[in-house]
Length: 403
Image 1 (cartoon, rainbow, N blue to C red):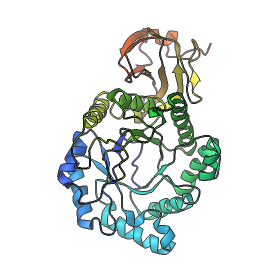
Image 2: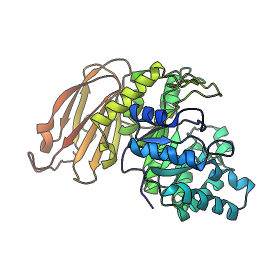
Image 3: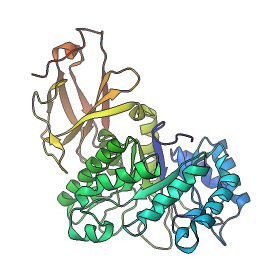
Image 4: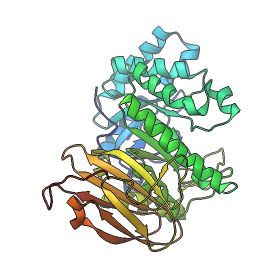
């Protein structure tokens, strides 16, 4: 089966548009312009879309260098409620024969936020797609929270979802663990939201590591409910902090306004670009330029928060890391420190994120004696990141004491 997730950093979005609501060629060009490398297709279901329209979309995506997660509602896992497993398998074979061999096809989207009742259906759908398709099935899970109603929703406490979803991956053969959590944009309870956001990053990263797959998180570009409309800096901050916690891809929620009137999206119901479109475009494109697929080559070993810690993340203290002996900031404010190992070279990399969404800050860093030549300082704009590589053989023996 084609390996889709974790090879390149996924920059995608949620859309929920039907065929016929926009011009295909113009829309695909817009996706490329906005800096995405993977799109979720228009919804193909009875009365909306044809095989020919989906193939046209795939052709346009290929011409523009994009991959496509296929939203073929004919094989969404909820179909297993109304048809037998044998009938569902035939539907999968039809969809696979029509679309899966296309070079732009990346995955079949089969479930969003399955609960305790529909999770077995999602698992079955992933297994059947895996059996017949050269591209994998894709499932997006609920965010995690720690209260009784989560048990009512998922059948297990929030703290146990790591095992729930890692078991799902092992049983189904899913290629990644994906989820959505927008709590960092909570305008009503911002401190609680910060803890929830980072708690989710830590929980899903651990689940993905246990299952041996990458994890993908959905981030917010559309304010709705109690979530504020993210600014340019908010979007940068979300992307940077997710990567520092080990994410190998993001999906922005959501690109388009729709009839549900959830909020002000980057593209409105008349397909007009709003100011947030240009913010999202800038964040995607500057990330691709400054980091590219590097995060997919880096395996997270440790992650720390500096100044204040959220969501159970360990707080950095002087000498706590065997490589990074000291880290300080010109102004007392938050930062995130990710320590990675490059899977090809074996070299240690650090990612420093300015955790402020308000102002830039200067950070100083001192490494163990073997890498003291890499000591220095850097100004990082609000919400942005800085990568630094510790190369063996430049100076010293490349070894550090833990003391």
